[in-house]
Length: 226
Image (tube, rainbow, N blue to C red; front, side, top):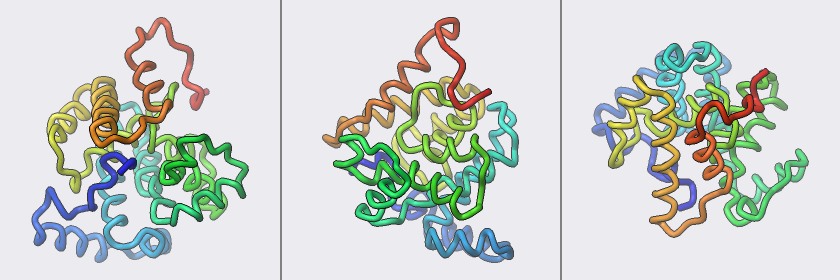
């Protein structure tokens, strides 16, 4: 599938079934406010657990990445807000929000779930924070000029506890010690996975990798930062 590592069933591998059930039970026990209840209804049980994992990892790594805890945590919870929508609805909503769908997104509408999710999060009143909305939009493919929050959510999505694939433990170690190299490795792994599966790599992903490989002196300020 074109969705990269996101095609892996959430929390069905990497954790034993008992660990998975305990993890979900603990989430349910503490799920006592309207935000989490609403998110659970939108995402479904397993993607809710995945989002919990991303939010927790992002919050824990936030200091090392120079990101505010609260923004990292909230963006992690909301990053997959539109992930469960049918492809036809993703395309329809992209049209509604006047999002410029490119040829690859037309072919693989699942790529739109970041952009559409950001629009829906804003429309629903869950967040008007530009940095959070940008991180939601950019987490699917990456993009040239990613902010620190963008980068953190992109990597956290690939290393949360439900992920189990070759190289994930090394990526987790890098995420805690070398954020720049962690993002480079994450982008390289995503590109390699897509190429090996016969899917097209979005130009935004290759642009993001080129951007990170450039010497800092040759870069302009990220477009999402001010």
